[in-house]
Each structure stands twice: as C-alpha cells, then as structure tokens.
Image 1: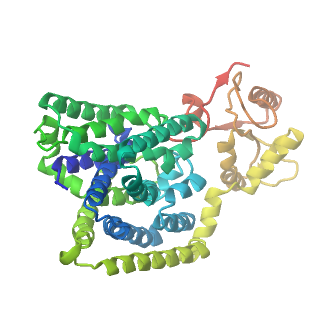
Image 2: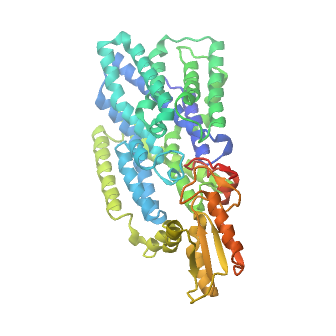
Image 3: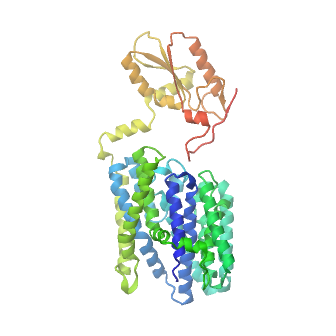
Length: 524
C-alpha cells in the first residue's frame, strides 16, 4: 500500500481535537468527534490491506490478527502498567477497584459494553474519573474487526460483484439504527459497535473503490476544503449536549471521507489540503497519535484528581498535554516501533507476539483480580477508609433530620444537649445544607448552642418560589412558607443560616455533563 503522509496529518487532526477537547479547551468542545475520524481512517487502511491480500490470494486471518496485536497491544499494555503503578499511589480504593474492572474489560476489548453497564453517559461527571474510559473506541474497532475480515473474505469468494453494494447496504442500516437510537437508547448508541459500524464501513468503501477513482484537480481541491470545514464545524459547534452519533456524526465522518477521497487515484493531485496535512509537524503528530490517544486520558484523570475538579485551569491543562505528548513519543519510539516490524526484519517473532499477548492478558487479569478482591487495597492508608466514608455517605444527623421532617413535619434540633434550652440558631436549606449538619453540630457543641434545622432535599430556600417536578413530602413553596412562619413565631431565634446549591438555583443547570433535568422554578 502506497504511503500517504496526508493521512498521518488527518490522524493528527483526530488526536489533536480529542486531546484539546478532553483538556477543556472551549473552542474544541466537539473534540470527541476525533474518534469518528479515527474510525474512518481505520476502515480505509485496514480494508485496503485486506483487499490487497484477497486480490493476491494471500489472505490470512493469522496474519491479520498478528498485525493487529503488534499495532494495538504493546502500547495498550504500557498504559495499563502506568495506570496501575500511579493508581497505587494516587487513586482512592473505589477508583482503583474500578480501574481494575475496566482494565479486564479493556484487555478483552469489551470495555465499551462495560462502560454502558457501569458508567453510562460518556459525558457524565463519573466518566471524567475513569482512567480507561477512552478504550471504548478500541473495543468498538476490535469487535468490528472480528467480523469484517471474514465477511469481506466471504463476499470476495461468493459474491464478489456484490461486495460494494452489500457493504454500502450494511453502512446504511447501521446509520439508520444510529439515528433511531440517538433518542431511544443514547448511551448504547454512543458505545455500540452496531451503531458505529457505518463509520468504519465508510472508510472500507473508500478502500474498495480506490482503484476506480480519478478526480480532477478542482474536484479534489473542493473535497479537501469541504472535508476540513465539516470537521472544523463539528469540533467548534458540537458539545456534550449534542445528540451523538446519528445525523450529527455525518459532519466528521463525511468530512474525513472527503479528505481521503480527495487523495485517491493513481496520480493524486497536490491539493492545498493534502499539502497542509503532509507538513512535517502534522505527520509527526500523526505518527504518535495512537500512543497519544492512549496516554492523554489517564494523565488528564490524574490532573483532575490533583486539582480536585472536573475543570482544569490553563496551566494544569497545558502541563497535562505536554506530559501526554512526551509519554506518547517515548511509547511510539520504544514500545510501538520494536513490535511493528514483521517478517525477516522483525525484532519480535510471530510466536513471541502471540505468546506475549496471551501472557500479558493473563498477568494483567491476575493483577486486576487481586485489586478487585482486595476492594482496592484500603490498607494502603489505615485512615483513608473512614475519611472516605465520611466524605461520600450521609451523616446520621442528616438522615435523622430528613426522616423527622418526613414523618411528623417537624424540625430536628442539633447541638449542645442542655435540658430546656431552646434553639437560638436555625439552619435552612436543601440537601447541601443537610450535608453540612454534622459540621454544624460540632460547631454548636463548641459554642454551647442549639439549632433547629429544615433540610428539604431538592428545594431551594426561596420564599414565594416553587419547583416544578420537586420531590419529597410536599411542594417546595409550602415547605418554605412553613419555615418562614416558624421563624416569625419564634423571636428567640437570633441567627438563620441559609445553605443551598446556589449555582443550580441561580442558573437552572448543573455542571457540564451532569445528569438530570434542568431546573424549572415557578411562582406558586
């Protein structure tokens, strides 16, 4: 297969948009479409190799999977080793245990299915701390390549003239399923190989018609520019709220296909797009794109853990990207390259590749199983389990106050236990106020004070405002009116502390990627 430097340049665009998007660069909010670009490129390159082997009568599944193992597994195992090594020191046990479970799924290329079942929405806040979340796309590819080589071989053997029409029909079917699932099953739609197959299939169709294409210079120029524009549109205008894939995936997929198509033909034209993508920096980034894709996400997860936030400041984001690029180059140079050569020049034989793949999978599964069975090794820090439980579970005082409010419509008291002492402090708020009750109780004890508390989950402490689709014992307007009347009837209460989830109540939305419906308030 003739080398096309512009495809490495297209890889650079794909990985660049993914990395910058994941790092939180605002004008790359749709950077996740870089994965779709990778799918098209992969379908094109892999089908080109398969078709050439079929044409020459040398097709071999053993050869095919040897190439895939050499390409995919060494760098992937290196990422697993990095994640487990750093995770021992930096991941709390639940995250470490989750890493182990997802590593097993990623090793056997089913992590897309694992994340559907455990993490759900790719854009959720929980997903931001999954170190191997990005391996879902590798799983989709490998599931596709479990079927596609055999399908292509069967079509070449028994229905050769129908190869292109039948694969095109399969692409249309997959695309229509994706469009339907965008609203019906959005999470499965994002991760499923069935609804993503058309993207790889588009690349495969380009490979199958490559020898029949000869475009004029003008058409090639137009296709290349239009392809870049379509990708740029998706990267800039798409976001976590964009229904995807489905119809919206057409822009990055057809844009990538247009760029590849513009360079097809025996005498491909030196178009502007081809020259730009063939520049040395673009090709260089494209060469390390696989390792960069693998390493950037765990590095960003570690950076978020260090920052204690989903959103990285500019300095930390730039640092994480720089570290990712450095690790990617080292991986490409010292991990990928030694395994890539085949035949007489191979530094690692076929037998060693397969044995190493099996051995690596067994060792990784064993390490992961040990982490899972130990529940993430809480014993790494004797005090960590207690602190973690305090930080992630409701306190007894919060549960007591909530239950009392629900059962007899009264407000609990907390603080100093003195017979006959009436509350002089009132704590009023939503579940965020409830989460702080344990801290308030300690403060009240120190001051010798007693407080009453109303912590109505899901209700803002606003008088004269109600919430549509609220939950709890009554509507928010009535609950807040009762609190106000309680305060007016008790002049002995000198201090009222109001605590709430103010960003939600003031803007009506949660954090980026947060699950749940937008907030709707109304006058009662």
